[in-house]
Image (cartoon, rainbow, N blue to C red; front, side):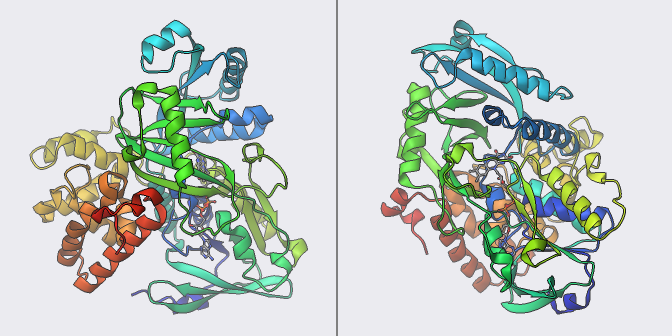
Amino acid sequence: MRNLQTLSNQPFDLIVIGGGINGAATARDAALRGLRTILLEKNDFAGGTTSWSSRLIHGGLRYLEYFEFNLVRESLHEREVLLRNAPHLAKPLQMTIPIYRNGARSYRIIQVGMVLYDVLSYDKSLPNHRMLSRKTTRQLFRAMDADDLAGSAQYYDGQAEHAERLCFENILDAEQAGATTLNYAKVEDIHVGDRRITSLTCRDMLSDTTFEVKTHDKTVVLNTSGPWVDAVCGLSESSVSKGRKIGGTKGSHIIVDAFPGAPDSALYTEAKSDGRPFFIIPWLGQFLIGTTDERYDGPLDNIKADNDEVDYLLQETNAVLPAAHLTREDVRFTYAGVRPLPYAEGKKAGSISRDHILHNHSKEGAENLISLIGGKLTTHRQVGEEFVNAVFKHRGEAVPSCPTHTRPLPGAISLEDARVNEWHDRYRDRIAAAVLDHLIGIYGARTGEVLALIDQHPDLAEPVVDYAHDIKAQIVFAVQEEMAYTFVDILRRRTTVSMHKNYGFDALPVVAEVLREYCGWSEERCDRNIQAYHKFMAENCIPDYALEQEVPSLQTA
Ligand SMILES: Cc1cc2nc3c(=O)[nH]c(=O)nc-3n(C[C@H](O)[C@H](O)[C@H](O)COP(=O)(O)OP(=O)(O)OC[C@H]3O[C@@H](n4cnc5c(N)ncnc54)[C@H](O)[C@@H]3O)c2cc1C
C-alpha cells in the first residue's frame, strides 16, 4: 500500500498531469534540471495513446505534403538523438514505398520528397534514400502487386518496438533524478484561487482514497494528458475549461503473423481505395498494419478498432500484396488510439498539423497552467525540453542547459558492449540466445538485474509461454522494480506477452503462480486481475466480430 497523504506537505515546483511519453519526458528533464517534480498518471505509465501508436520514430515524410518543414526537421533531429541515447529501444527501420502509375503520388513527387527528407536530416547516421526501378522493385518484392508499378523508394526511419518501455525508462530516469512519479493516481479536481491553481485533489486508484497535492507561489502545473487535455482542464470550475483545444483523430492497427508474400522490411504504401498512406511494419516477429485516421469525438478510455477498420486494413494489404489473402481469421489482435491533435474545425483528418503547441492558460484565469496540444512519440524529448524551459521562464529564473540531448536513457547499451557477450557466455546453459537478445532489446543495460533474479531462483529462467521470448523473471522484476500493479501492466506494458498469440490468455495461470510464489500476491488478487485482464482485452484488443463468435478463450470473464 502506498501512503500518499504526506504528499500534501511537499513543496513541488512542478506538477505533471499525465504519464504518457510526453509527461514522462517532461518529468525526466525537469528532475534532471533540479525542479522538485511530481507526475500523476491515472492509469499505468504509457497506458494512453503512447501504447497505441505505430511505434515509428520518424520525421513524418507525409508532413512534407503540408509544408511542415520545421516539424519534419525537428522530428528527424529527435530521431537521431533517440537512436543515440536509447539504442536498445530505438532501432533503424528500412521502409519501402511502392509507387504506382495510377497512384495519388507520382514517382517524381516521391523522389522530390525523398531528397527533401535527406536534406532535412543532413546530420543523420542512417543511409540516404534510393529510388528503385520497376525491375529492381519486382526482384526485391516478388509478392508486390505489379500492375501499374512504376518502381519504389527506399529510405530509413526509426522504430521503437516497445514504446511503452521507452516511456517507462523516462519515468525511471525521472525517479532516479529525484522526481516522484505515480501511476494509478488520478487528478479529480483542480482548485483555482486568485488566478492560480492552488491544489489538486487526486485519487489513489489502488486504495480508492483521495490525497491532495498543493502548489506554492512558483509551482507550475503541466497538463500532458494527451487526448484528455480538455477533460483535465474541465476538472477546474474556473474559465480554464473554456474553449476546445483537442480535436482527436482515431487510428487503428491490426496485428497478423507473417503471411505469404510478407515483406522483410517495412512498407509504406497507399491504400488503393482512397489513396491514404498506411504502414505494414515487422513488429515482434509479426506485422503491425495501420493506421486509419478518422475524426473522433467519442469516449477516450478503451477505444477499439471497428470491424470496418479491420476490413479496410485487410483489404488494402491484400491489394498491395495479393498473395497474402488475409482474412479476419488471420488477425491476432487489434489496437486503436486517439491522436491528441489541435482542434481544427472542418479540416480533413490527415491534413491537421502533427506539430505541438504549449498552451499557456494565463488568459483563461490560471497563470500557472500550461497544456500540451499535440506531440508525437518521436518528439517527446524536445517537448520535455520546451516545457522545462517555459517553466524556468515562468518562474523568472535563468534557464539551465538541458541535459537530455546527450544523456542516455537508463538501459542504453550498445550491442558491442562487453556485458552483452558476458551475459551470453554466463547464461548459455540456462537461457536460449534468442531469449537473451529479447531481454537486452527490452531492458538494455538493466538486463543484468533481471538475470540476477535467475541466479537466486533458477526456475525464473523458464518461459512464460512457449511462443514468446519473455521469461518468468520478468514478471517478478516488473512488480519489484518497475511499478507494475496489475496483470495488464505486466503483460501489456512491461513485457510483450500479451502481444502474441491468444491475447496472452495462456500466460495468466503462469503469471498468477509466479506472483503468488515470489511476490506474495493472494489467490483472490490474482483472480481479480485475471478477470480485469479479460475485460481489458475485450474492451481494447479483441475485435467485435471475434467476441461475437463463441470462442471460449475469447469470452470475457
Ligand atoms: C494510431 C496512432 C499512431 C501513431 N503513430 C505514431 C508514430 O508512429 N510515431 C509517432 O511519433 N507518433 C505517433 N502517434 C502519436 C503519439 O503516439 C502520441 O502523440 C503520443 O503518444 C502522445 O503522448 P502523450 O504523452 O502526449 O499522451 P498519452 O500517451 O495519451 O498520455 C496522456 C496520459 O494522461 C493520462 N491522464 C488523462 N487524464 C488524467 C487525469 N485526470 N489524471 C492523471 N492522468 C491522466 C492518461 O491516462 C494518459 O496515460 C500515433 C498516435 C496514434 C493514435
